[in-house]
Image (cartoon, rainbow, N blue to C red; front, side, top):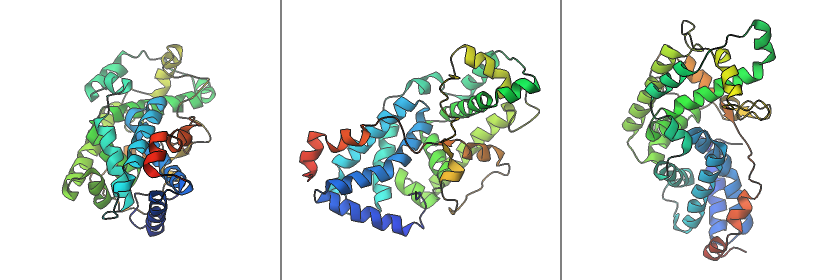
Length: 293
């Protein structure tokens, strides 16, 4: 699986163009391959944008339908990655705010949520027994911190930090200058770092907040489901392991421990909507528009 946001992936870019040309000529198999190739990355951007899996699936499908319906307008003046993900990110920015986004809109609200969540310290034995739930709490909390960024900041951080897009690709996708992309990424990194350094025990051990202290309340109040973990599943890869690491890194702040933690967030290579591709490929409007054969 090749990360489309790495500029050195020339083979991936050529493959995209070949698939686009065939799909524009009505080749159903090529269109299916093109969608299948990019849906994983689009879904994982959406998942980090909104945290809720069902919302992320809906966003992914909506964005891909927009890509497909406009595919006839792609003329190859830019890379397919730039063209495709500009449509995707614009859709994510303009879509109606989701439930989790409404719940958490600032780091002040996140601090208040953490302060109002009762602590229950676990023994070392209880920590070992509940290791998976504690990790789930960790992922859930960190995903909540992403929601405290503005949508624009979130997209820049997800593309630049988690997908390793450099300022050239990132700026082209978001249609901003390279300097603006670097500045927004620096601010997003700084905002996350400042909050985590002042609140999160994973980054600064002097902080009182610990995931194991919150997990009992989270389970009892169905914030996390101990029978159906949302993030901490063995078949999920991490961003660090799933994506290539040969991107140009832009380090703007010294302490990257929090960035390392975000690199460990799950990267989901498949999701539950079994009819996902079929819903797009078999849609009558799309079949007529693309003259699929």
